[in-house]
Length: 388
View 1 (cartoon, helix red, strand yellow):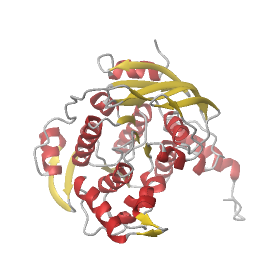
View 2: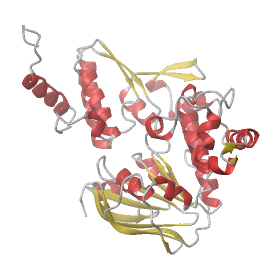
View 3: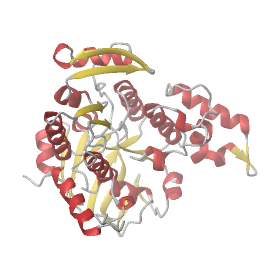
């Protein structure tokens, strides 16, 4: 501010641009934060924290929505801060990040401190055991599913931030959508589900042309969409677990416009049990659950609609390793039952571990498709960055 208390807009803009440049982020700093993607909003939060000249910085899941390039920039800044004597408390479910960046690790389980180790004196397997209280086995469950005929086919779709996108998914298949932040993956899914309007292109379900203008149209025709932003778009945080789970199917649980209370309770309790949601009551608000259990409530909501196609946008973002494994097992069970699954993920190991085929997007266009055998971190990143 000036000595008269007036904001120095020019200096504020230059300082914001300077801090973002330190993180290799270049954007119009005058645009509204609500117009940014979740990942871009995360980078704004990180830049804001770094501007405080704090002696201790707490980073709570700072990379949950970031691309690999942005993570590398953040780690570079964090290392420089540490060298300057700044202390960092780094909260993350991504083990590889903790082992790369941190000096010590403390494991919490159910609100209790389980252990503290120096990073050189522990291992990934030991930390996972302490996190979940049991042996985890492989990170990604084996996929042994019989893949059927094509269920959904999207042809030459164009919309908000994407153009000429075509892909298909078969019964029992899990296809992964990969790419850098801003590549247009989420926008494609929002267009497919009717959140945003498609400008061009067609959507076919079992060979029949669909007209999807709203999410209600998509739900009615057998499509479910687990959004990347569970708190902003996936849940009514102040509503009960029962209400959240039953909302998309409330018509079938009502008679003459009146909700059948017992039918709704039985419906919700069935999914809470089958997905092992840790809860004290189905009437407790969704905001009272952990991130992993909130995600399972969103999943329960869509399973209740019995979809033929299920879109999962960042399905394990911000959940612990135990909940991730449970979500992967649920995905396999759904695929075995013939559900066609589209998974958008920024986690390359997750894409490789769970996908039967991988579509890669770059700057709003489809840059390639890889089979399970062809897909590697290198081949995906090559397509995501414009290489051949």
